[in-house]
Length: 514
Image (cartoon, rainbow, N blue to C red; front, top):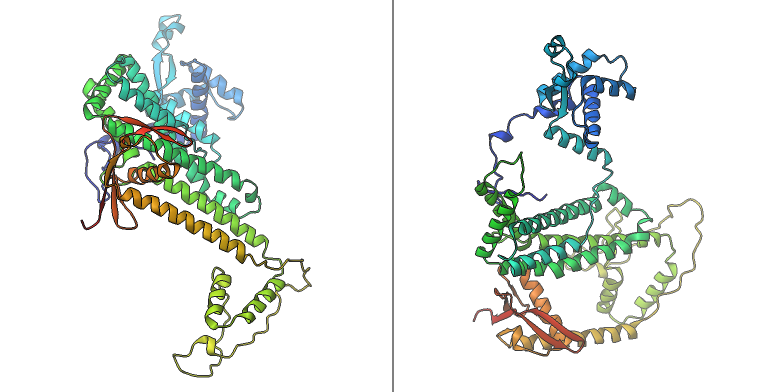
């Protein structure tokens, strides 16, 4: 999960830092005692009464009010006012309730000396009840995959880059809160959604035929999110790298000033403490999109998880379809294949056909060792005599045979498709070799390019930006490094299908070993 507020600590073998843990994290929390105390039913009912009234802006309750509300629910029988006062005092000692003497109800000195109290929930108790209320509504992991927060994060970072130093502290603080909120929502929703589709309930659903009805919608949903990650993830990373440390420091200082302008009776931290916390939050945001210490960014990991989920959905759908076709008789298909094998002239052709037909199917093994005609280790199984096995059907009753059309020979269509694919691959490789000979060049060096050139260059940019050092290796041994413009320079290039504006990336290409 997303964890903010990192500070200097002990470095682990994996390269991460331990959170800033102190003695306050080791003491027991008395505020949770009412959830497992002996009279837990009474305590929970009282705290829920306080919480419902707190949400209706009725903060202070007297023991008579609480006692009457308990009796009105009818959940606890024989509950006395003395028991109610004892329960309220115990919740006060645990830190769930604050108490205050109710002087307004005193009409005499004797009543004033009795110290009648009224009670209010503490801030911790409100959060505990809010958590319990949310847990009662939980039915699964929830979450969603939406690239909208990525687009908003990119826009907010663009505002920080272009308007740094121009906005007032209050505006910077509002922008910062929206940025953190979108960032937190993006991470938590993505984590919860992937946990949902990886849960045992989802796995069980994928084994049923009902999964086939919405598997295509799920695949498109995951695919749209993956495209959003590729599009906006690179933009966000480019903006984060374009922001200089001085600009980031100035923006965070303005954010801290704007935060301190908001009166907060509970947060008594000074400027330096708040500034340090914002630096850590910014570092977490940058590490999430750019990676740290040579580790891949969370965007790359999220994109990989999305592609793996798409592959799992497709594989499961194919398995269900194969399972549905398992009951169809394949006698005519196998008879056609048998005649095909008989027409072959050599054992090598039979090997190739067998690999093409049966290579992807799970083998079926029969127990027992057949008698061999020779003990020579050089004798191939194809030279042995065939072994006949009588197989009986598993079903007792006769099975209905379904009409199945024979396998059609599509050799001509396959040859044409293969030739077209080879020509496309050769053309793409010629374009790639032409660009590899350029050595070092920038986007601004060109005003017009073809659609094929655009696809190749964007592919290089995507591969390079997914690496921490912005470089990758070509299959022919070329090392390609993409340099992101630090000053945010952009260039417009014309294509046959339109005009595109993009950062002025600089490409450095060199052959390995030179």
